[in-house]
Length: 622
Image 1: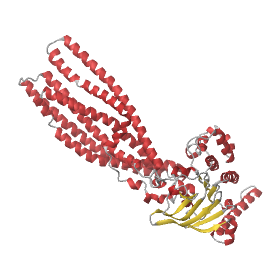
Image 2 (image 1 turned 180 degrees about the vertical axis):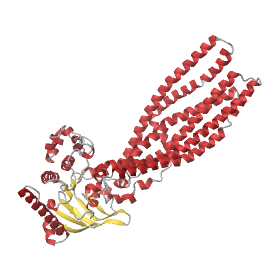
Image 3 (image 1 turned 60 degrees about the vertical axis):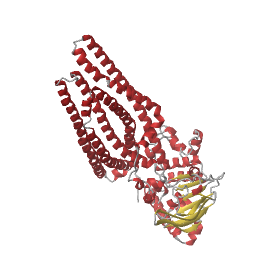
Image 4 (image 1 turned 45 degrees about the vertical axis):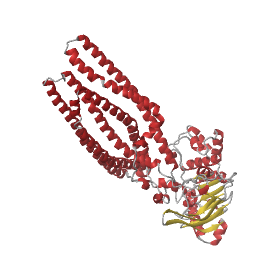
C-alpha cells in the first residue's frame, strides 16, 4: 500500500465510509426558504432597488386595460379623434416606459444572481476544503461537482427570479383585486370562484413535486460522478478497450436520470394545463355573467366589460407565475438540500477550541505510543504501533503491500485520528495542535505526486506561495529539475496539463521534490518513488531525495530496500504490527522478514543486471 495511492483513495482509505461522508447525508435535510433567502441579505440594497423597479413596472401594467376601456367607451363611442390620439399616446408611453424599466430590472436581477452564485460557490467550496479524508473516501467527486454546478444554478434561480416573481405577483394580485372590486364587485366575486381549486392544486404540487425533484437531482449527481470517473481513467478505459462498456454504463445512468426527469415533466404537463383550465373557467364565468349584465342594460358598459376582462387576464397571470415559482421552488429545494448537506457537513477531524501551537523552533520529534486504528468499527488495521523518530533521523517503513505503512504515516498530519494511543510531535499529541500549523510543518511527497493544471512555476510555488523566482529556481536545481524545465517550450511558465500529463513520471517526481524543498518542513513523509523509472532518472531522483532528507525528521515508505540501507532505523510492518526494528545490518543478522524481503529483491536485481549485460554483449535481447 503506497502513500501515493492511499492519498488518492487507495485500498486502505476506501474503507472509511463508516466514518463519515456521503452515507451520512443521503437522506437529505429540510431546507427552509428563509435560509435560501439569507443569501440575499448582503445584496439587500440592490434587491430593494430591483423591487422598486418591478413595482413600477407592475403599476404601469395596470394602466393599459383602463385606457383601452376609455378608448372604447369615450373615443370610439363618442367618435372623438382627439381623445383617440391622446389615449393612444398614453398607451405608447406606458409600453415604452414598461419595456425600459424591464430592461433595468433584468440587468439588476442578473447581477444579483451572479453575486448569489459567487456566495454559494464560496460557502460550498470552503466547506469541501474543511472536510476530512474520510469524507472524500466515501463521496464521489463527480457528485460533488454536480452540486457545485447544477444544484447551485437551480438554487440561484429561485432565490433571485423567484423572489422577484413572488413579490410582483402578490402586489399585482392585491392591486388588481382592488380594481376589480371597485369596478364591479359582482363580477369580482365570480372571478374568485376558481381560487379554492387553485389553492388545492398548489398544495398538492408542493408535496408531490419535491420528492420527484429530489430523485432527479440524485440521478443527475450519479451521471456526473460516472462521467468524471471515466474521463479521469480514460487511459485505462482505452487500454482495456472498454469504451463500449463505459458507454453502456452511462446509458444506464442516463436512462435512470431521464426516467426521473420524465416523471417531473409528466407531473407538470398535467398540473399546468389543469391550472390554466381552472383560470379559463373563471374567464368564461365572467364573460357569461358580464355579457348578461351588458345585454340587460345594467350600469356595466361594453368598454367596462372589456376593461374588466383585460384586468382579469392580469389577475390570473400572477397565479400562473406563482405556479411557475412553485415549480422552481420544488426544484431548488431538492438542490438546496444537496448543497446544504455539504455546507453543514461536520468534518470528522476537528480542531479543539483550545488547540495549541507547536513550540518554536520545531525540532521534528515524532513518537507513536501504542497506536491502534481502524477505518471501520470492529476492523482494526493497526495493532499497538509504538516507535520514536528523534529530530533529524531517517525512519524507513518496509513490508508487504497492505501491511499498514500508509496508514501509519497518514496519522502524523492527522488525516485520520487514532482509536487509542497517541501520535506526538515534539511531545504534544497531534489532536491538541492547530491543524493548519501542524500540517504546515509536515512535507509530503507521494510515489505518484499530484500536479495541478498550471505552470511549472506555480506547481513548485505551491510549497510556499510567496516564494521568489530565485528561490523556485534554487530548489528546482536541488531537485535536479532545472535542466529539463529549461528544455520545455516555455520553461518555468510551461503549462503541464491536468495532473501533469505532459511530463514523465520522473519529471513529475522531481517537481514534487522541489515543491517540498521550497516548503522546507522539519518533518518529511516520503513514499520512495524510484520504482517506475529508468536507472538514470532513478539516480537523479535519489540525488534530489538526498537534498530533501537533510536536516529534517524523515519517514520513508521504502519499496526498494537498497535505498534505505543507511536509515537510522528500519521498521518492518506486517499485518498492522511492527514485527522487526533496527538498522539494515542488524535486521539482516536477525534473519527474519526483512532479510527475506531483501534477498528476494537482491535476486531480482541480479537477474535484471544479468539480462542487461547479456543485451549489452550481444547487441540484442538475450
